Image (tube, rainbow, N blue to C red; front, side, top):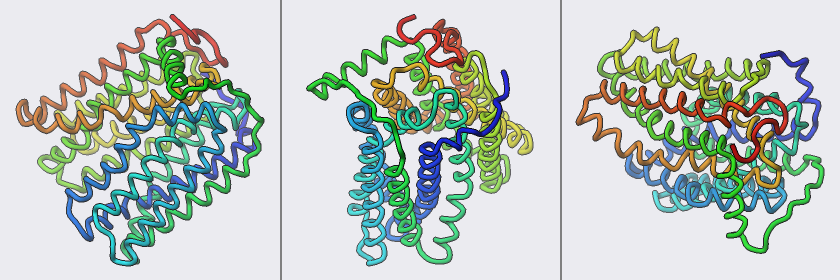
Length: 411
C-alpha cells in the first residue's frame, strides 16, 4: 500500500459540485428518515409504517435494471437532475399532506413509491457519473470523499431531523429534505462534463441483454455481486432483528444497542479517512477481507461479549465497510467500459437489495427454532465463509490498482 500526494481531486470542479450535491441530498435524506417514521406513526401504527417503507423499496427492486439501461443510453447528468426533481416533488407533496392534515397511509405510500421509482434510475447513474466527473488517477480519492461525506451525515442527518421533529413537526423536516433535492439538481446541472458518445441498440430489451452479457463475462464482478447478495441475506437481518433482542436481554437495553450502532458510524468515518490515503495492490481481495469483522460482530453478539468488546468490534466493522466499499467502487469504475458501467452497476445494486426481504422473513422463525445465539453464530460463519470464498476466485485476485488492469473480460 502507498499514500497519495494530496486532495487534488477537490480541484476538479465537476467532482466538487457533484460532492456538494451528494452532501446536501444525503443530509436531507438522513433528516427525512427520522421524520417520515414519526409522521406515519402520528396517524397510524407500525404496520402502516411498514407499508410506506415497502412502497418505496419495491419500485427500486423492480426498476433497477431498467435504470441501468437508461443510464447507459442517456446523459447521466440528465437522469440525476430529473431524479432529484422528482424526489423533491414527492417530498413536497408528502409535506403538504402532513401540513394539511390529509395524510394517510395510502397517499403517503403512493408518493414514496414515486420517490422509489426515481431512486431506481438514479442509483445506477451515480456510479457512472463519478467516473465521468473525475480523472482516472483520482477515482479512489473521489469515492473515499463521497463515502466519508455519507458516513458523517449518517450521524448528523438523523440528529438534525430528530431535532426538527421535536421542536417543530415531521412535515418541516420532510420539506427541508425536498429543498435539498432541488439544490442537488442545480449543482449537478452546473457540472461541466465532456460529451460522451454511446452506441445504444434500438431496443431497450436488447440493451438489457447486452448489459447481462457484459456482466457475466466478468467472473470477478459476478463473484463480488453474488457475495454482496449473500451477505445482505444474512448480516443485516441477523444484526438488526436479533441484535436488539440480545441488547434487551443481556446488555441493558436500547441504550447499549444505540451505542453499538453509533460506534459503527464513527468507525465508518475513520474508514473514510483511511480510504483517502491507503492503496492496495489487490483491491478486491482487500475489500472482501475488510468486511470479515462483520461476521465477527455477529459471533460476538452470539456469546455475547461485554458491551465494551462489542463496541470495539463494531468500530472495526465501520472501518471495514467504508474502506471496502471505496475499493470496490473504484475497481468497478476502472475495470468496466464506460458504455456498460451503469448497467453492471444496476446488477450490483440489485444484488445488494433483492435478498434482504427473504432474510428478514426467515430470521425470526430460524431464531425461534434454533435459538438466538445459534442463529447469530450460523450467520457469522456464513458471512466469513462468503468473504473468504470470493477471495479464492482467480479473477478477483487478478484485478489490480492500475486503470483497467488485470482481467477485464473472462477469466
